[in-house]
Image (tube, rainbow, N blue to C red; front, side, top):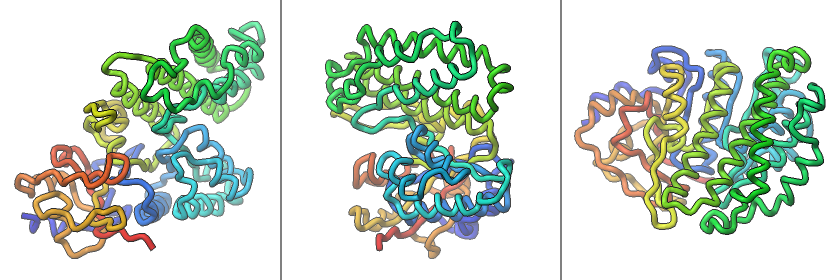
Length: 400
């Protein structure tokens, strides 16, 4: 059944990827079915290098805290801090411990050294300041937005002083109680004080918007764009905290949707900058709805990739990554009637294939068993196969 695809398996290279696409996308999304495997991140790093040299890409963004990502971007563009500090403070989800991520950041810094800003590579996180156990306080983003506006606009235009903002935000630890994820009563998101914060945040974002022509001229487009990130992050976090305190049956699904919505907003902003390589879990980047079980409940929501694709059309492209074995995660040889099993039958160790051609060639592929949680290894869903431009396949993932 796979013979028609065998001759279409090509090396994971920029030229092979671009041949699958009708045009160079502004966002080229490369998914992964599990986190924490440096083999996959090394493949990503090499593809990014080729996209820089052959296709003019200048930005890479990964599934990491967008505010922390500013620390990495400052380092790769201007050398602010040390590599050790950046790896410790510039990544969420434990991604700073990855040797492949460290190699990427160090290489980007070396590439940028001595180059003008217009030719430099950029780094961004596109996730919100969120972990599975909860969400950060909006303090960092909101005070940064207020500080930017206070620098450039008349004080009487501001909806509040810095002191008022500090007072209504309160202690950060009241925002970050991990028990709030499963117990709405532990969340402050619908308290009177937080309602006041939401109004102030909305007014600050509105002020940033109405003063756009002046602010870009008075500061810089780069500073204004960063202030937009502060605003998106603050309002997104406040919205997330509000629904953490909700008690309706749709609460958890809405939280998942809000996270992907924050991701999508950051990706659309990065698309304005220029061609960008996006790297995250397949489930965040696919064009279909995502699903999982949490607290015994089935959850479903539109992924970030689905939202972005609806906005960008052909200027968004998605390559899912599929794996054969990850024996240290308990993932052994895939069943032969699954997508992964068909691809495992080919002799190459890693390659890229046309997903739609693969979907047409396979007869009734079966879903592979989920041998780990959604947060670990997740095999491809055959129902989603034709909605990808390509599949990157890695036959065996081994940890040295």
